[in-house]
Length: 359
Ligand code: UD1
Ligand code: UDP
Image 1 (cartoon, helix red, strand yellow):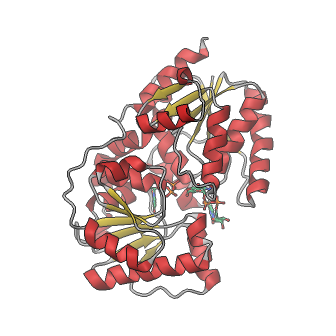
Image 2 (image 1 turned 180 degrees about the horizontal axis):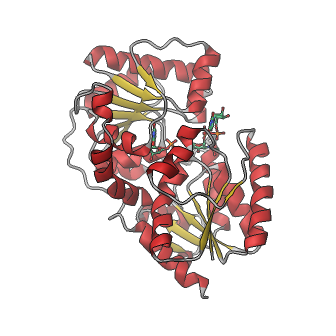
């Protein structure tokens, strides 16, 4: 039996190819949702759109401090894992769900597989960096998306035999859903947008949106982009960011703020945008796969492949740099190669897990 742990929007999306593969192969598995994300448009919407089976368990841990949330997840995961006794437990990414789930499983002496292992921003101010490092060091199977992620793991002394370079399941998710998105979603028409004549934005990193000065600069930079290009700036607002904009009392001028979109709508918006501004991890990868320029509103990235192939530029949380970055990136030729694999990561991961069960 395989235990699949997830808890947030990006985990549902990037775990979906693994879940589909388990279904197709008729494997014995269960889905344990921690409930770290719980609002309809951050959670349920993705199960519906991606036609995923309902989670077998939902811990409903909700929001909280890092320690509070981590503790609740560990306690809940421990109880379910002890009951189900899976031979392998899979986690994906770098959230509190991932670290807490991996810790609980490894202390029950269960084998842990970390999908998207080996990413490093080398910035310990990010909660995600701590989650990545801890999870990688207690995992038995490290599914690294790229060779450079593998190198990061080797540099930290992790045994090469534990590492398998698979590509990133985000490519599988994009390939599996782009055509469906084109057929099903009509979001450009709904929002009165024309292809390549709008910008798309996401922002939710704790170090950006919980910091008054940074959030102010980001909003100023986005307003600057809207004015300079006279094009719509579509900004589906993450709940953390919505809360902070309200708390800090910022007015937002000229930006098209919306609720978060489903994956099919968001994929369509991403694939046809002139450029995407973001601080998201998954969005840096997806734009790279889709051939759309990306300006990342951060000072570092654990996705250096996007910088290497030339799909992404770091513009920080600085209004002037954001505008300068957008000016240069909108002129790029969209001809880079996708460094994240062929869209078979999910198949490879499940193959390894199926073989591991019998060992
Ligand atoms: C979490 C992850 C981050 C990931 C992001 C994906 C950690 C440390 N952070 O950040 O790595 O990139 O998910 O989106 O694990 N909220 C809602 N509804 C929800 C979820 C959250 O209203 O469904 C609001 C709450 O006010 C909450 C805040 O958003 O306090 C932050 O949620 P939380 O899960 O703590 O962190 P994210 O910013 O979502
Ligand atoms: N996404 C979405 N709707 C939105 C914004 C993002 O479906 O309105 C998807 C996006 O396509 C990507 C994922 O959410 O697959 C990224 O999640 P997020 O930015 O929350 O987390 P991160 O990748 O930074 O961990």
